[in-house]
Image 1 (cartoon, rainbow, N blue to C red):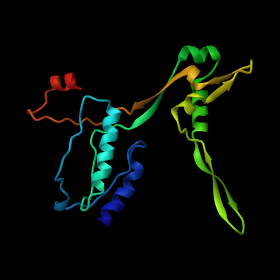
Image 2: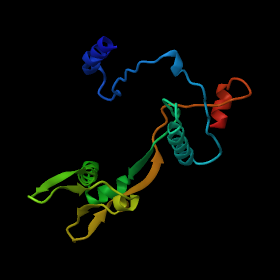
Image 3: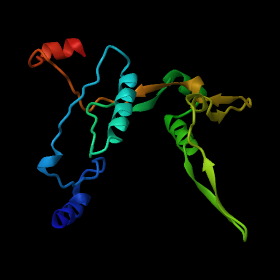
Image 4: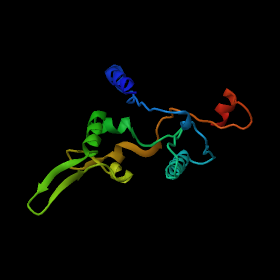
Length: 184
């Protein structure tokens, strides 16, 4: 296993930049899945994802359970759709908007405070705690002095990440392409 880990580590620089870090795990016959649970329904996908995550957390607390995987999960993301006509009329570039969002979306240690009695770390919290905080983000101050906020030049909403994996359940035999398309 150690030799395998070293070989994989040596090959990592050759992987594409956006590839996930390889994970090596020793398994045995005792590690085969013994239970598969499907969570599905005619409800919002975000609700299903949260339910699956909750179920995973609960199953991982059961003594003897080594691992719980979720298939087909889509994480919640924030989508920002710029209004091209609006940003052009205000003289704002998409790059300027991106830079403002990235600059405000930091969460890092700011400084350390130490004296004889105590030591503490101050933290600069810049990550958006609420969707409305992001919508209210100041982007630019116009010559008139008016501040243009993100929600004036873009639609900002919660969404689900792009689908990468699709999991289906069928108790009536294989699912055909026509059924797949019409059902999902």
